Length: 313
Image 1 (cartoon, rainbow, N blue to C red):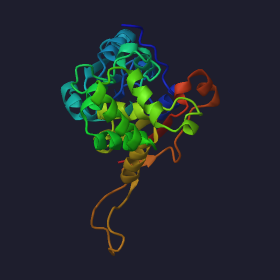
Image 2: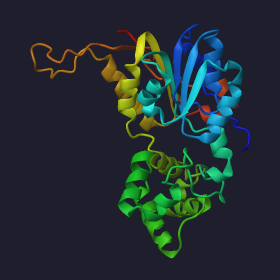
Image 3: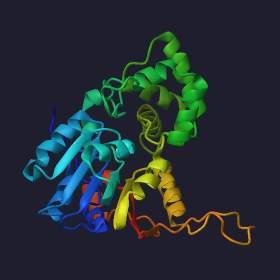
Image 4: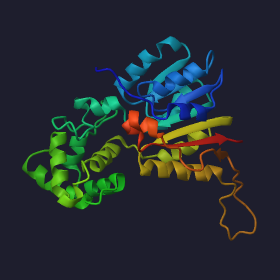
């Protein structure tokens, strides 16, 4: 395994948002290489505890190595963060003082050729799995899904204007021979997009993002997870969420809005009958973005948006 190199995005902003304290219990749902987790443990010393999850075995191994000096104060589980209820049960905890979710794909995953996440790695296999034991790969999706379903994935998850044409050409190409490499898919994408739309740099990013999201089920259950995870915070606890594309950000924004509502009754009713109470204070009325300085050092921070909320009941 190559070194799991990854620069945490908006590290100081995230730590400030969590409002860390000695003795707190924190959850890092996407541990990655352990960058955010390390700072959580460091800044909640000497008795703060951390529960973390990830689906990537390489990430878990790297994080465990990085966090070694805090042994006894953290546990990492191989699990989807959406299964946090089961993880909390296994860890013997009920409520937490803070949670962080960082939805960004790591530099390691992008740069490691055999993971198949990058359109820049032409000879890489079409894999894209976070969990390398999972059955569904990008290769299987592109070679077996119906044309309409591929088009829907590209349109919904990649917001790709030419989704229908790309899907049509994928089906035509695989009838001749199965798609095997990232280069195979990239060539189809580029041949499907009119030349005038290819002049502003690589045009495969959106489609690769869409297929990755579909392979890993990244948006499935996200809304409900944000709601239920926030509700496991203690009063005064904070949740910090980093998103990297508009689909994720929109879901997080919607979940926060519901949690912030004092009533969800039909406005035509004379009195509230739902009993819904305001559960959080949104601390970022607009999402926080990376500084110009950080963007220059870490280009992957350019599209990041940070939202923070505090539990008030």
